Length: 406
Image 1 (tube, helix red, strand yellow):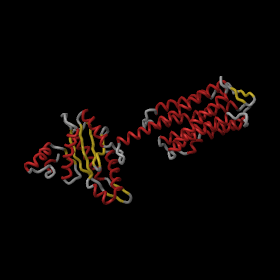
Image 2: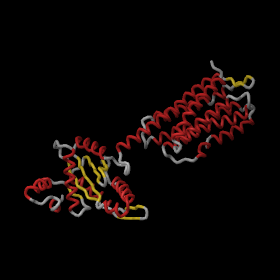
Image 3: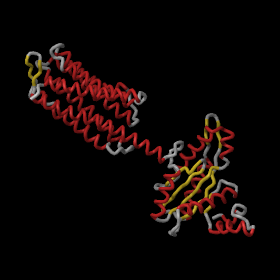
Image 4: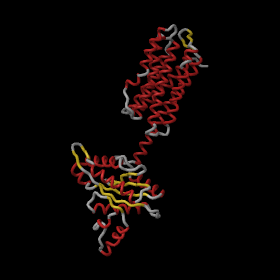
């Protein structure tokens, strides 16, 4: 079997490789705090392993204090990395919340006849606490952002913490022996290999989570409107087609009134702020299951699955009223905003989504011609009027919107 110092040396070399990889990642993404914390974790691991292997050069007490504190602190930085990764509030000093008390107890243990077993046990327990905190951070974060490997990472960190807890009493039950200044311990040799494996697995999970986050960001860029964060046109139409096949639903098209005037008066930033605040206000007034997306410019779409004509009108009127009462704020400017809306309700007929959208669009045009700031449902007469206009000169729904209102 390999002796303990050889295992510690291998540990230092493997951790050095991980540290170099982390340093490269940090160099490419120097603004990401999670990578900075994980980089510190890797270098603390290297320093801890180096200190442990220098028993012939430095007094054992110094190695016990410094190496033990470093070993516990590195798991504290790992915890900070996960907090930063998930956007949780944190302070740099939190990395030392566990290692500082551990150091104090390590020093206090000097009063014992043989302090070594107690010190070694405390180091394992301190690391276990930090690792358990890491698992807790991942578990809570997983309630919000669900990355596929999040639960697996929680499991690995929890087992890693548990392994440290189980190993800690071995230092007292089977004290490490010293041959000269060289530590000798069968159980520590085996457990060092085990903990090294868990350490490597932990950093593999870090890499996997980063890749999954990157993939999720790319997916959102492909499916979400960059400015407002709601579904983009392609995603909205895909979801609308899926819901239309599932049963009755209402499809609404919304257009912001006089949006060009807002852009001309308050600049494009004013227009962007209006769109962002409009989306936020609409979002809180939609029922669960609704699909909301930006179709382009100042035009938006809403799908209301399971809503008949009256239920859809109730929701859309509530949205319209909420928008009419809101005050858009952009820099030092304040201004109002209204919307026009047309909608239709699918009735089970086999039609293309484009046909249903065209019906809702006719309702929107009627709402625009009715003075804006209103909701109008599509009626079959609208299509008949449009067909009749070129041949007979009959009034279009845009010219006589009042008789076409729902």
